[in-house]
Length: 186
Length: 186
Image (cartoon, rainbow over all chains, first blue to last red; front, side, top):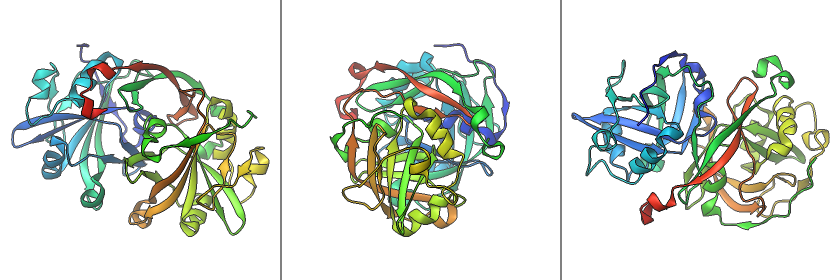
């Protein structure tokens, strides 16, 4: 298990930096003194201010009802140091095990929500439910990120991007085309 | 400009293979005999069957009204061979230029929708508007992918993943953890 990285406050309006590239995330929750964690790859940024993120949390997940009741969660960004942990979390259910204990992860109290942060992740985004209009029909939750904690190094963490079938793409090189952007597009 | 790759039919229930890793896509549209293309990074898979995808298409885009009126679009997957084209498309507006002409791209007729395919892309997914319940409030469109065209090679195309600020992450190595998955999770 990697040592938990020290994290700094990060502007919530800028979290697209971490979520827009499409990484697998670990969503942590708490309801009635039980915690849980799920893996999730179906997420999208929806707005800068307020900082909105849409998450598809299938009703078959133990986390679905916990998050629906608590109306908050934490979106945590794992790196490749946690690859086997990510797979393990995605292939077990919180109905049967305590995932923090089983996977030797550290639950840290969040500042603004009831769900815990996962200390071993590169970043953690505290989220409050913003709109549940599409939860019934699609299991689609719109959250507002109300607090962001990010490790300042490495600048570009090695993230996992799921393709299905047990196969992941790992984030690769970084290229800038900043000089070709109109200033208002940056 | 890369030579347009030959494409095969691909099962619409399996397009998560290309979209779930979070690539930048090019969304093509047609309305009243005008075509357009926009770059988009705010997308998520929402369901396998029917094959649903959620796209945030900001109302400030020329494409927004075209797609809202035509009720269809094509989601095209560019590779790094098209990096400067992707940036160019994202920094110009269809209100002023014909993007297919300006960027030397080939508009091919789709089979089931009015919007054109972009022949130079690795894959093209024909989409029909499935639910506009969140368009007014969030500019969030839910599309059903009704037909998919994919180039069989390379198996893992080099895709672009936007981080903001003019900087892209390029897809990197592929790792399998298939052996650690429960069969029903694959």
